[in-house]
Length: 252
Image 1 (tube, rainbow, N blue to C red):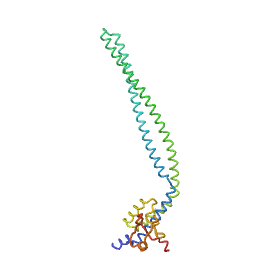
Image 2: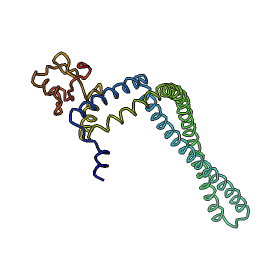
Image 3: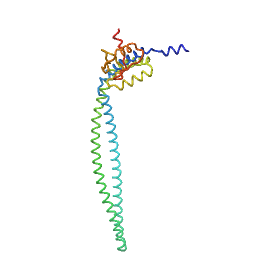
Image 4: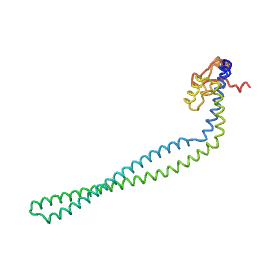
């Protein structure tokens, strides 16, 4: 059992881990270069998708407001119809009253219903004006959605075309990267990823060229260069924080 475990978990030296880090960096840099072909397309696609989501939410909200106004319009029209029926009934009752007091009471009811009709019709005009405004807003939003959808489809198509052309390259490089990672312990890998995402060009591991860090071009002292060549411990640039390695290609 012990022999099997030793085979499965190879204990790599620090020098081998550092070389694996450098190999991983070169692979990731190639992937970065391929991804540069996409340019701003991924961000543009995301921005358009976000804008469309906002516009569709706005359209949904406007449609909801129009539905609510239509419902209120129907309600007010029913109230007008009911008031007209009541007025007709009251006028018939006026023909059968026995005294002025009853006549005056019915007249007040008629006047009240006429006032209700007047107020309802005023509300109906207001609703119609707001509905017209909301429909204009809806048309504008739908027109923008149509334009943005065309833009999104074009950019998506362009992005998908690039991704299809580079898919095999990315897959092959990703496989190589995963193999390189098996020779690096989690602590070093975490440090690599942290540095890689904190620097602008994604270079977490760099070589020493002409006595300087090739990441920030600051001078590296001779003794530190000697330690880097030995590869006994992980050394980072005191200026930019990148991992420094001895370029194996120089000694080939």
